[in-house]
Length: 143
Image 1: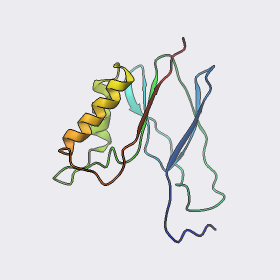
Image 2 (image 1 turned 180 degrees about the vertical axis):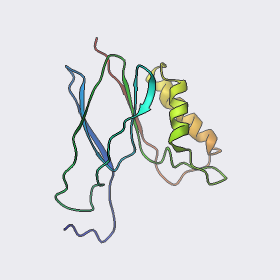
Image 3 (image 1 turned 90 degrees about the horizontal axis):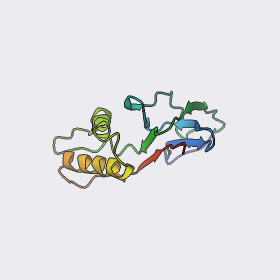
């Protein structure tokens, strides 16, 4: 048993992309669900998240796999995006994130990131948030 007296843990979404085939293999250790854009816009990747890192030793993590096709786009983010709150102590939330990203699903990656950043800022009345904000986006191209 791991002794974690500080109750410190880390969430992690770790992936490996085969650059020749587009096969994406990933493990989720308690992290927020990424969004994947395929033919019908962005949708949350549904997989059972495993236990966060740092709580117990010798944990086995489930390996998940997806096949990316040309122009598929993967968006990862930390929980501070969906947990950003406004003056009324409401969270930005997964539903609002999904709606915002789908308004810009076919735009270039910089526009997508900036639209989410702007949307979160407006929702929060540009108040400083308690946590850092991290977003990562990648678009798979076969050519």
